[in-house]
Image (cartoon, rainbow, N blue to C red; front, side, top):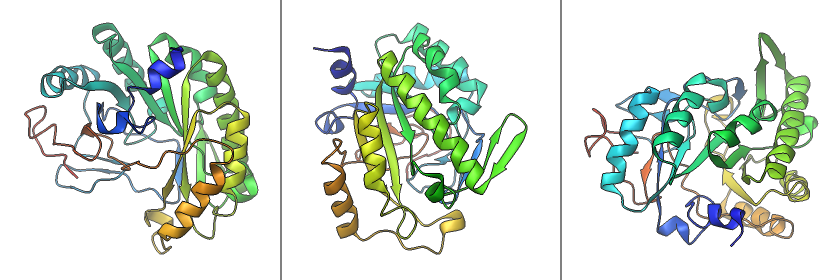
Length: 287
């Protein structure tokens, strides 16, 4: 079995068989973000029980994150993946790397995964590999800045903030560069693409072609949740979503089971119990 296949077969967000078998834990250690997606609203609130990305009951420290894993392993014998998916951008938070270092040292048997917007990925591919990360999820909503300028309000690089076309151009360049480097390193790469009717729906097939050309393992097309700047848009009809997936499948394998889970998710996808109910933390995080 190849290394890539060994990573994927135990990752419930990469493999549809694993999706029903293996548990994962998301560690909410990364609150800050370096881009403004027009569909995003981040919430850190123990009283928010919505199940979607960008939400966590609380932020934990790297040491607290390691303790969460110890307790989660006692709950789930099928725990296979430790992921960091926010609620902000993991690579813009130094706590992500501190956490990965602790996790890699204590839990070398668990697959490490990071979900990122890709803006900083070219700078951290080697470091992530050294810290034991083997799977990456990168959100790519456009490969042309003419489209991307309507998806993102701004991006921040160091102290500089870019808007509109320039923001999208710099982000897409970084994403494509980072993906190419990651694939060459041997990471299993999944690309998440948010289907936004009237914005990128006619462009996603081109995204699929570009991802396939760069060796991405799988694409996960997810429907818009109307929030933030896009709060007045309508999510795609199921027929549109399936039609786009079918067309993209001509170029790259498609993942159909995504639950669009929280930044503090725990369990087998779709069968989660709250890590907090099991005394991993003090408050409920169940969405």
